[in-house]
Amino acid sequence: QVQLVESGGGLAQAGGSLRLSCAASGRTASVGTMGWFRQAPGKERENVATITWRVGITDYTDSVKGRFTISRDNAKNTVYLQMNNLKPEDTAVYYCAARLLRQSDFGSWGQGTQVTVSS
Image (cartoon, rainbow, N blue to C red):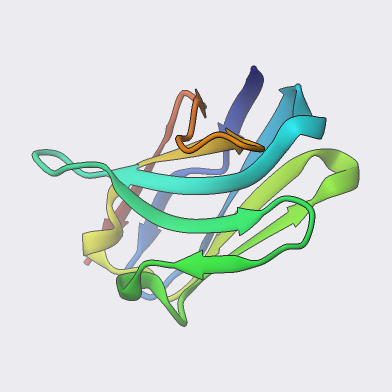
């Protein structure tokens, strides 16, 4: 398994920025894809962005395209989510997750970090 620890959440005003970090440890050599998910109160968990660990191919949900950027630092075993032009609807608990090579699901999850955007 992979252990994940998120940091960087907090309070921001609409139009502001926050940067989330996710430090991975354990079976990092077996990681295929890292992802950021979010869950707002009363809503289902949503996949926000993903990045392949070795090549760095990224994908985003439509609502964050052009505003959020996912990146990784393989030397530090860390994945980031830079969030710009934040909107109140971005308010949620953000989770980092890892999917190992040859696995279909994200099996490792962080504890989550709260992001609150005020209007």
